[in-house]
Length: 553
Image 1 (cartoon, rainbow, N blue to C red):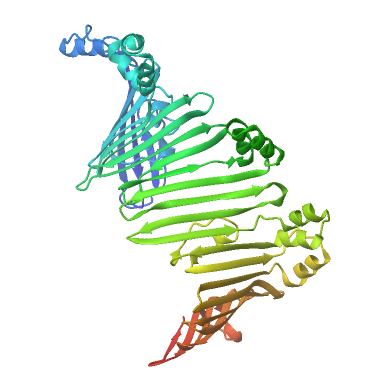
Image 2 (cartoon, one colour; image 1 turned 90 degrees about the horizontal axis):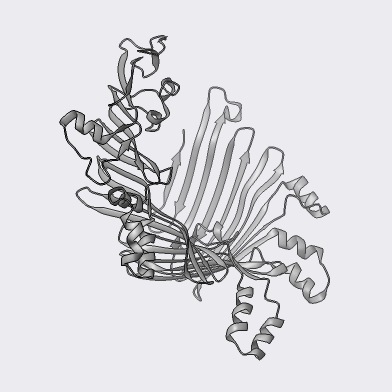
């Protein structure tokens, strides 16, 4: 009734964990190795493979149980199955060429018992794995063959009744909806008992027309995970691809980090706004107005990588928008905006990054002349403006300039970065690159109110001579409620692999001087047997107390 094959493997490992040799039973090859410890660890593994058999034959032979009249079970076959029993974990490299593909599909052999089998369905063969060891139980299904559909499970017990008779008992639209649900595929399923959790991935393949010629949806994927511990927690995510009036975009909904609520996000490669305006104006507006819109060339108006995100949860809720607005040859600007309420505090953030705007193209379209200096400026300058109601740590602003901000101060902030392109061939660029490397200049201005103004300018990565790099030289000052003046400089010495920084700051809070060395300096000033790293010195003078800090190794 059942045909099976067996494989016995014995491996020994040194006490240090390395492989020290091995031997195998029938059909196997023995091996020898050097012992890496005094007490080798022996691992015995038994693999039993079972060929195809009918469940009805096995039950009748073992217990004289007749299930030949049970729909679905009388023709059920188990094509292949593999049982693995091991007293310990086995190095995968020792068995990868000695076991069949079905056994290897369960992954590395671990201590315990594991069973992998294939279940025949109407649409193909499904593979499932059950593992038990070290007090852990795991059951998983990985449907790489795309056969596990709800329809397949229904057909298994009804012999196609649901599919064949569906339209006979249900109206056409309702029958289509039910048939769509039955086409949902269980791509993955996992259950573990330590800690107890269940996870599944559901897929609905194919295209589905919601509004003819206007709205279609495809490739729906849903993931859900439920933690069944003392505090039950459910997380989910679902993605789908949409086509609406010629525009493709992806829609995602997922649970927030807190687990309560949801985050809904829509993204697209691009939205050709100009084409959509002309298309719908011809159908919705009077002929006179639509003809005027048609004469205006809006084909270059495109929003690249637009994103809309809506968050609703206990501790965070709000709306985020971003996109790169392009106007043909003029380039464009990247816009980021958000209105968020976090822990009862409302904040508004709005930023525009002009790094992709081409001033040279705009001047050329107005005057018909090309100015080389403006072209170089477009390649070198990155700038942006951002307004925030409160301090925002680590904002997700878009754009080449705004994305460099580690945090945003309240009020209006203007930033600019100037760096010559490496492939620039002008005499000015060649001179700068030859004598100073590839330095960059950054400027920022923050206006919080009429009573507070902050300005900062920094020059970084300036090669003053071979082996000496000026990592930073910056000037910062503020006027208003808090007034101060600060200077900072950093020098990297490649010969000793160390960077020295010095900072002085004086203001309403007093005077502070900081000296640091980061790196490893061997034989400082030629002194043998001495190595220095992590030096630090600081002095502060302010009311009512001052202080001194010294440290290093």
